[in-house]
Length: 195
Image 1 (spheres, rainbow, N blue to C red):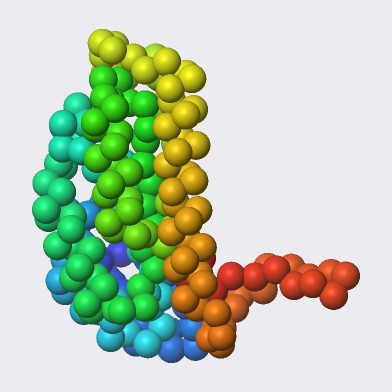
Image 2 (image 1 turned 135 degrees about the vertical axis):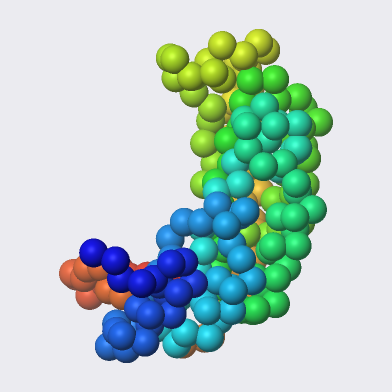
């Protein structure tokens, strides 16, 4: 049925107001071109909307992004990240990157590493490109060797481990609410709004 809710910011605002007993409303995944100022303002103001966002960027070099048929304006991405952190200084931002996409040069991969070091994401998933039959990318020239993809994966993950360790280290001593996933043998496993 028609709820009268026409946009994601309106939906979050409505959910937050109608469900005050729900402590965490999490927006899981948002393409960068759809993260508006209004959305950030609602996330910042609603007391039960988590300051967490997963923005699938896929790469950081404009030429690779164009080959992927993805938005390639990295200056817009930088402005978006700055706006999010300004609106919500405690926001946790996660993203995903693909390494070894057909034609990815050493310089393009280095641009990805440089961007990761600059952006300092809280969480990053790195995936090695895998050709899927029937997709346009599977037929692109200059497919990357598996060994090179593995080496790039390991290099990107090592960099992100350093960044995540530093970002997590900055939280030491803070008290945070947790959602406990399980416990046993005197040990509990859980997550904060940042996970």
